[in-house]
Image 1: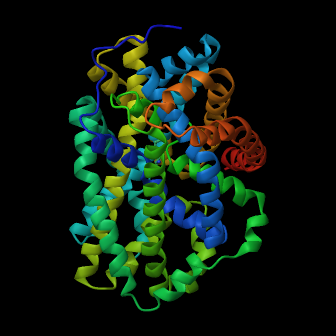
Image 2 (image 1 turned 120 degrees about the horizontal axis):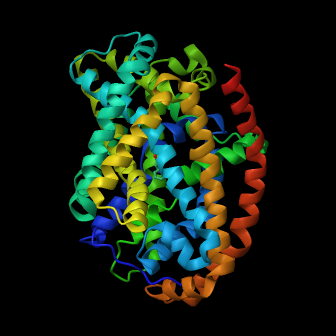
Image 3 (image 1 turned 90 degrees about the vertical axis):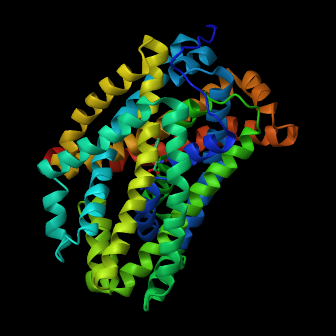
Length: 456
Ligand code: PHE
C-alpha cells in the first residue's frame, strides 16, 4: 500500500453542511431537470418512478456509500484510492473515472450553455415564439460554442479557487437559491388550469411499459447519472472530509434530496406542457422522442410560458436560471474529479490543472455543439454505459478486494453492525449481478445509437 501523500493543493471542507450541499449540488443537475422528466414519461409514469426508486435503493445507496467511505478513508483522489485498495492492477479504473469526468463535462457544458443563453434571452424578452427554429439557431454551431466556452470558463474559475473557497462557497450560495426557485415554480404550476392532465400523465402508473428491457436500463442508467455515481465524483468529494460522520446517513440524505428535486421538477414541467395543450397537440411521445430529446425542454417551455405575457418571461428566466445553477454545481464536480487526479498523480498545482484540463474539455466539447447526435451518443456511452461499468468495478473492488478495511472505516460513524451487514451484502451479492444484467441489456441500444451516429 502506498502512503497517502497529502499534496499541498488538496483541500478540505469547512463545514458538514458545505460538504452535503456540494455533494447534493453534484447530484442535482441537468439530469434531474430534463432527463428525469422525459425518461419517466416515456417509461410508464409513476411505475417508472417506482422502478427508479428501487434502483436507487438497491444499487445507488450501496455504491454511493462505498464511494464516500473509500474517499474519506484514503484522503486521496480516486486514481490513487483504487490503487491503494486493489493494487496497481486497479489503476485503470481510476483513469476510467477521469475519462468519464472529462467526457461527460465536454457535452454537459454545451447543454449548460443553452441554459445560460435561454435565461439571458428570456430576461431581455428576446426569445421568439418559434422556439424550435430558435433552438436550432442558438443551440448548435457557433452560438452554442460561445455559450459552452463561457460556461466552461465559469466552471474553471470556481474549481481553481479550491475546495473551500470555490466548491463549497458556490454550493452554499447556489443550492438554497435553487431550492427556492424550484419550490416556487412548483407552487406556481399548481395554479395552471388543465395541469391535472399533466400530473396524471406523470403520476399515473402504466405498468405494462415496465416489461420493456430498455426501460429497465434507462432507470438504472438514470440512477447512476443523477446520483453522480460510477466515476469517483463523490469519492473525490469525500476525500476532502475530515470529520467522522455516518456516511451511510449522508448517502441517504444526498440520494433523497436528489430524488426529491427530480420529482418536483416533474411537477413543474408536466402541468406546464399540458396546460398549454402541447401534450395533446404534438403528442407528448412525439415531442419527447424526437432525435434530439436534449432540446425538448428548451423548445416546449418558453413558448408555453410566454403566452402568459410579460410575466411569462420572468418565469422562463427563473426556470433556466434554476437549470443553470443545477448544471454549474454538477459541472464543478465533474471537473474536480479530473483536477484532483492530476494534482495527486502528477503533482501539478491546482490552477495549472484546472486551466489546462478546462481548455482540453472545452475543445473536446465542440463536436457536441456542432452535432447533437454526437452529444446524444456521448451521453449514452459515457453518461450511462461507462458510469455503470465504473459502478460495477467499484462494487467488485470494494466487495471482493477491500471489504474489511472499507467496513472498518464505515463503522466510524455507523455503529449499527446490522446496517453495515446489509450494506456489505448488497455490495457483494446484489450490486454486481444486477449491474451485470443491466449492462447486458444496455449493449444493444448503445450499438443501435452508434450505428445511427455513423450512418448520419
Ligand atoms: N448528477 C449530475 C446530474 O444529474 C450529473 C453528474 C454525473 C455529475 C456524474 C457528476 C458526475 O446532472
